[in-house]
Image 1 (cartoon, rainbow, N blue to C red):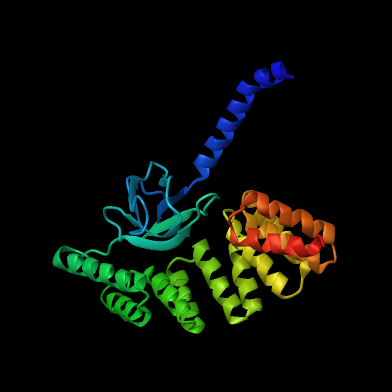
Image 2: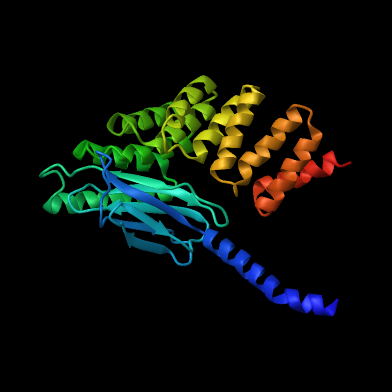
Length: 310
């Protein structure tokens, strides 16, 4: 028996090394693409990410010839991502970065700078105002941030992406109608931005308008590049309506898009419970714990398992 153990040791070491390497690759990783309004990739665009509470607090890179970029080794938390390229207006996007699971990609669509709109002193002035507005948003000064973004849009209405930041502030205030109006303004300028459809669908759900949420998310789901969030949220819509078969379909699709994501698996467990399938619920909850043992879903799964196994 000792001979067998010694002979297996190198293989076990290799297996453990491979497993740890695959985990390391998943840690705080995010990628995306920078395109112009025609959908063409922008080469050499500068992409940055900042989070003063993280270590390290910032990342920077440039896009390749296909407009792609990526960061790895990011600490979990809220990050501000920015993209800039010569001849284009800069764009920002704030989102949470997860640590041990895949993060949805970020797609920046940069608008061509209007001649004379952001040049010389006017450009520097607007950049300063943008930084000040972003600081107000980061400090949760919602009304002040909204007013600041509105003032910038008065001077530079082509900066339509600022409506995303305004929508975030409106949502924080639970002013859902204003948030919806802000997202719609973005879609008027950029009708193909999937993440905006996702956020708009989320707001409709928060408002309790599940029919509008479904209609909005279906538009995003019909695109070739539709990501996991779209299908997960569609599952949520149908789950809220009590349509368990439809919810199952979308949660399964979300799980297929990211096999390491626990949230859709947890929801599949709840669907099983609603259908009276205790064995299926137990299997799903055990999988949730295995996938993301430190997640909020795992804690809920442990509590449910304790009840189901009594």
